[in-house]
Image 1 (cartoon, rainbow, N blue to C red):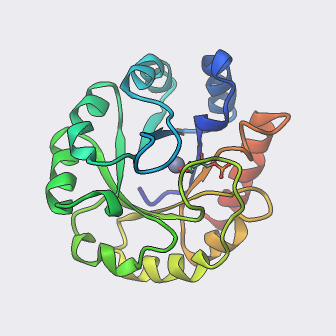
Image 2: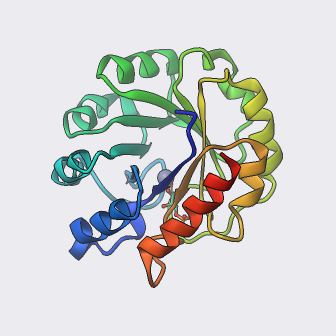
Length: 222
Ligand code: DX5
Ligand code: ZN
């Protein structure tokens, strides 16, 4: 979880050609596909569920990739097993949506997935403090979740830096929201190693080229 990885979010892809769009960025070297699950309650938007995940799982795994499932839903415990069965490799839950976070993390792991915990921009880092030994990665949101195409919030950069110091070395640190060629450098310098990008990859005129450029920025740091 501590290698540098670009995780394009399919939320910005053309859903009528999803397989082709994923194949193009994976051919360019992408190994992590980010899947944004929204329920219309935790966030205003409604997006993808286990049925779609299951439809893309074989393709992504056959290409050597992993499915990074970001649950922006209330009561995520109810759906962990379904997403794991549909092919999730990493499952990321929001601390704001979990009443019994230890149990949720344990459930993700017993379903055979890597466990991540996400924090909204206004959620203090201390919310992670008691679970740092239990997680595989943390996600510091750099937009308020709900939609792709929002502006990166620069105030999260010092939070990323503090998160890197708080987390054990083997725990990955992901950033999600508004990441693109102009905003990747600051969170990279601050210690993030997993970079989600939606509109900057699938919203670009040439998604594989956009992915290659972002991966080159990450490789320069690695
Ligand atoms: C935000 C989602 C993000 C989003 C990223 O709610 O969690 O993953 O799709 O999109 P961009 O990179 O366009 O901000
Ligand atoms: Zn996301």
